[in-house]
Amino acid sequence: MEKVTKSKLSEILSERLNLPVETGVGIVSTILHTITETLVNGENVELRGFGSFSVRYYEPYTGRNPKTGKKIKVEPKKLPFFKVGKELRESLNADSK
Image 1 (spheres, one colour):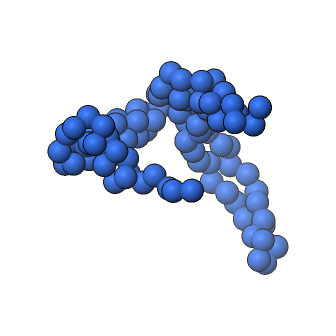
Image 2 (cartoon, rainbow, N blue to C red):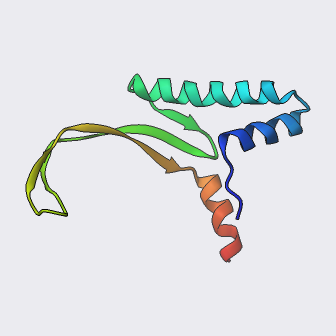
């Protein structure tokens, strides 16, 4: 199975739309930058048929260092969350039927 990286995605886009590679790189970079900015601003991103991105907030808690067993304080944090869209989920599971 091949991994699709940012540069590979740019290359595929350029080939399919018959664009220079630099233009494909710019388009992919702009899309990813816009998704990142939107999440940083606390907003959600929805790509119909693909999925949606949101930010989840986690409260601080007391954890444990797995090496030493010592208790540690884990600071509050925000993490990105992706929920797969119905169309993508169905496409992935179509082969297993």
